[in-house]
Image (tube, rainbow, N blue to C red; front, side, top):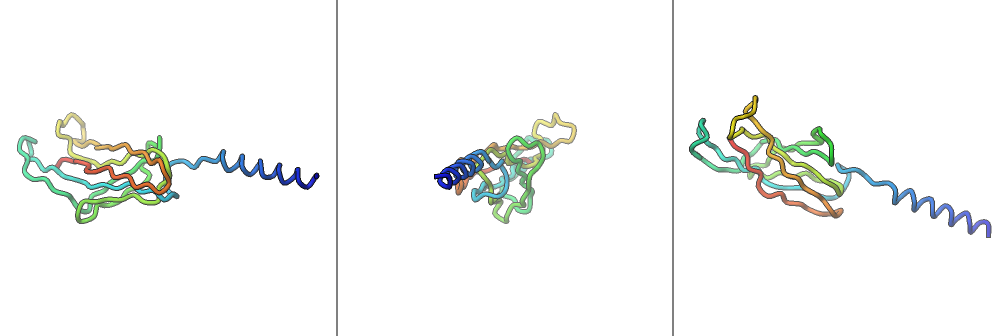
Length: 134
């Protein structure tokens, strides 16, 4: 009887530990966020659209959960596509740096951000096109 009580107590402790541990957003899972970077190329005064194309070799960044720093970055493929793999369930922000069409910022650039939520372990979330200006 005493041996049986010890096993039940250990089982309850293990279950409590497993259910109380929530891994934060970030790497270590099996989910994916993907999309494409589309560039709209304007003249210097941003009055005439000269070209629209998917761009290769540009940085795309990700922030995990409520973090305020960049968690990771990837370069776009020749077709403009990007992919962040091995993510856990949670909230993410995917962003690129773009020229600012309105030019109110000191640097002349802004972040173009898409907020994403992964809700299942093996989910692939497609953010579609992220549009940046050049």
